Amino acid sequence: MFDKVTLSEKFKLFDDRWSPKIVGELNDSYVKLVKIKGEFVWHHHEAEDELFLVVKGRLTIRLRDRDIHLEEGEFVIVPRGVEHLPVADEEAHVLLLEPKTTLNTGNVTSERTVAELQRL
Amino acid sequence: MFDKVTLSEKFKLFDDRWSPKIVGELNDSYVKLVKIKGEFVWHHHEAEDELFLVVKGRLTIRLRDRDIHLEEGEFVIVPRGVEHLPVADEEAHVLLLEPKTTLNTGNVTSERTVAELQRL
Image (cartoon, rainbow over all chains, first blue to last red; front, side, top):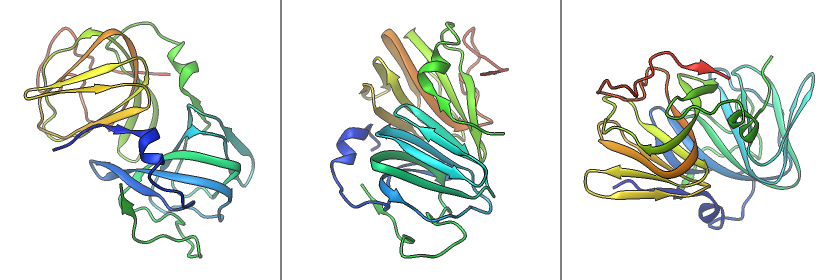
């Protein structure tokens, strides 16, 4: 039986960073939550657009030609093929929406790659 | 060139209720914003799961066997085929995520049906 999801409660359930947790699925996509601090790795997704919505804190999405600064209640959709680098000086809580096929590090493999995502 | 979306700013751009506005698209889905007050119509979507995230206010999603009460920062995904009736006593600001094929009133046509959605 499906039920609602309270974002703040879900974020209390984990502390690890850069490890997205699945909190919902619809159609061919997952809703994921992730805690971010520091710098990720430059990557892109060949065939998937990716939505970043800031729930708490601040997040910068660096692109090759500019930076996009996101605060709480702001989102950006990074189109497929566009290289990006998420960065947060302080811990940010972020909701992701992306196809189920999406790997967090996209076209690259690094120590940040998480192949099997936990569900909360 | 894509850019970020500030939810609170987008909600300032319209006053009409029950008329979802497109504020983003990714993969096969639209991100829409809608202002809700009062009662919608019972409907379901044959082939589309639908996400409701409350940005401001409170929203009740009535199902045939129970009610789901949502506050700010809470979402629910109504699976395809499940009849539902959105209700809000006071105006609520809601983010929707659903396939581009989704009609707001699903399997029914009423005065609430909006076939052509505005983009903000």
